[in-house]
Length: 480
Image (cartoon, rainbow, N blue to C red; front, side, top):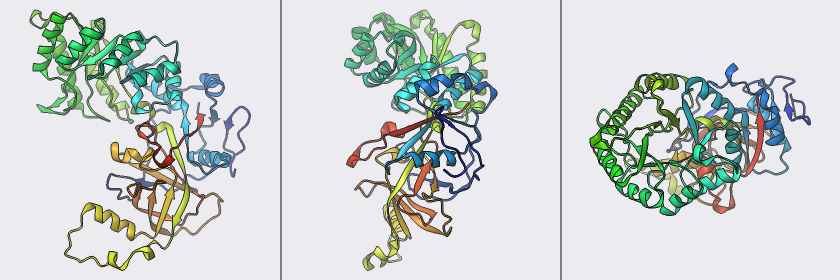
């Protein structure tokens, strides 16, 4: 491997000769829902690289329990990718996961939100290695189904379900309610009257949180879950009649929210409900738990300081309120890289277009779908890689995720750097499996690599095995 020594038995990867940041790689914006891509400059600020996130003391856990390779902080992602590409005996796609990233994000959380206990949202990336790493830091888990609970239990058989798991789904199958109760989980969430009756019959000793509807300036921000003040009052009164143990409130402001006004209005609403619940008219409950949900942006520090200030004002520490949260993307987003192989290509693509396709009348209205097909027809080169829309890149559709693509040549030879209008397809037989219909790339060969950073959230959790394609191989690293 050029520029690096081989990994030693201590799983250390060190850089001997610096590799230029742009060597063998180019960063392009990849994938809006229209898949119309442009080259951009992309620089991520690493908020996790601080003294309070040092994890050198976890060397034994990372290397001996998790099988991770130690990587020096000076080693570039491109160097890491090239090393592991050289270790692959097949052309299968694979992930590289920085396990230390999860711990550093937790330590960062403690720094900025020391009063708020995080419960990792398993749905974000339901992999055992994440659950095991976070459980090692004594973090709790937000489970939304019996299967997610089973995953946590299989990974952490000795976990204290009473304290470390919340069944955070407002609308639950009765079979799942029974399953969580059977495994001694205590906390759950509701937002409607029927759910209270289900809890009364099947989980009468549960600690129940009321899910609040999120509004901004009087306009509803959530339609699927959450109860407004009128509904909350009805639920408080019914819970009193049914002798349900209501213990607090829960809310979720939405994905990657950094809106100060929205947080402020929602926390003020929660404070109002806390106070209403204590009145005789509304049941005389003493709320002790506030769950501020998830949706925290990856760039975290400013939002966290804002939230902490608001919480300290509205729920002062001396009041003794237990504060919790359900971050998912925050813990995982930037932890993972996906490395794909170019398994096929079509050069001189324009020659494949029929005369009929080229004879489009000027006055004909072009639909979005036709416009996308036209981009593909006019491309110079089509590349086919071994992960796609039915796999990791489902996030283009479901999460409106923007990917960034880097390329790496297998043979390291300096090639012509002229760029061509290109298209990137996934591996399946479905024509919809198009990752990018407009991107500029140099001429790459079969066996070269395209790799993508920041694919740790809502990617493989929603991936399928359609047509028999799915990325299953993982390599683990850690940095001090």
